[in-house]
Length: 349
Image 1 (cartoon, rainbow, N blue to C red):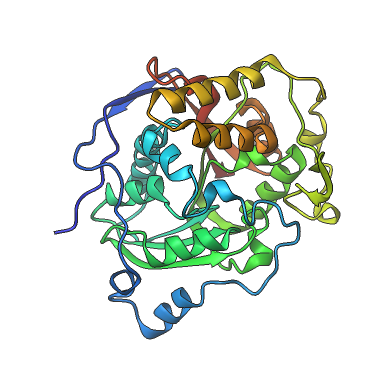
Image 2: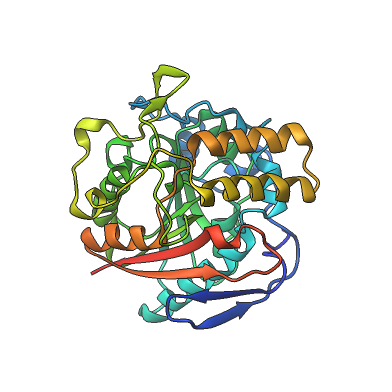
């Protein structure tokens, strides 16, 4: 019998309306890995062929994140995920509740189409959400820019039994419409990806999501958000040490200066909140058993790549794109990073 999914201990959370909610789950930690043959068992020939030819023909336009060592199969992100330092378990608890509320609004028990942006090789949180709705059938599509992670998710990750179909595409999750994603989805999920982008790139993605999410659907983002009322620190367009290495996630000619994104002011000087965020993450990893090289590698990645907007910024940008936003802020005294991590839900108006 396949092992069920566990989301860890009881989690208490607070949202923008100051309502508290808690859910408790037991069993094992996250879905286990399995071999390609087992993963493909039960798929039609056409679906299996799509899985085995998962590289998408569209090239990445920017080169950013495509070969990031931290996220490779031999990289350190697997430990980051299992250590729960970024509150993946708590995010799965809240997302389970959000999806349950949405399902209760739907007539009958419809199959749910899910798009997982920047899914990585271990899409554990969204897999846990699906497993915790065992009487609902899911059709899962994932997209990631890193070919190593696409191969891992396609060939080895164990999805819950109620996932009727799945496909993993290689492509830019910040520009899914031009990288092979078609149709409309009931739920789009993004875990730990938005903090890499600029406000303009986030506004561009919000516009694409307004096309990809059907009326009445959901967007759920579990991510790093800087505290409200702290200065925004802007990501450089290119690696300062290698100016020919672009860090842009969307080709500049596609970006629009949306009003909400344009209003964000930024300062190039170091911000106290960001130095605290980096130091707390590094210390939390070591405290949970990370070796120092792995913790150092994670901290280097974060210093180079992590430039989050705030929850209020997210709300302004998504409101401008036609969404209604709800914010769940984690209140976890035993989780050092809870002040920096939230789950935001957006629904098309």
